[in-house]
Length: 220
Image (cartoon, rainbow, N blue to C red; front, side, top):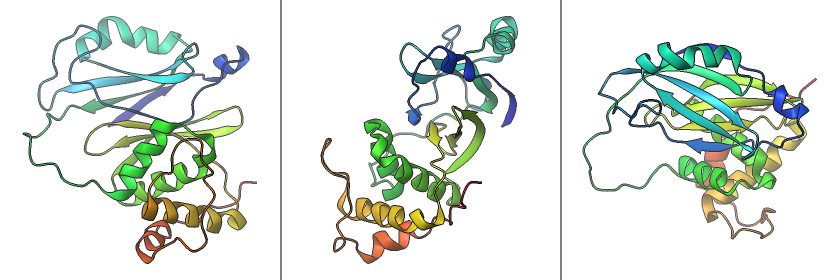
């Protein structure tokens, strides 16, 4: 995987648009330029677009032919392209019996799908935990409105997660880790409920998982 270029997301800030800071986007199984299916081990190019009207980032996977004939030039000239990289498509394995996913990954996906800003710090800690487990890798990072945005790619599925760095202070880290531990133990509460942690609810397993995340240094 090779990063080639990063675009200019500040263009959208000047237009007064709000962008959702965390999302999951699955790797396509076919070129989103010409529609041809990717073959196993085929190279592809990914563009990450800032869709100001929808308030979110949009992933686009294209084959080398479409990249050369159309998207290479767009990636260089369109300010909406905030990141791009090359990858190798891996065909999904044959269907098998469903298994329970890793708790941290499952929780991260739920939080990203909900998009509740109250869980911004928990999303970041979970992403760091998965990065340490080598389930996520950083493909790109850029600054938007004074905040650092990480673009993570899942090492097995190719799904893309956009995660904002909450710039946690050391004095805040313990509270966030307790919140993550509680969520791992009890699950995500209904939408709209108070996400505050219950001091007596944290169990050993969740605590150990949450404390696996490294200390977050204070930002200057």
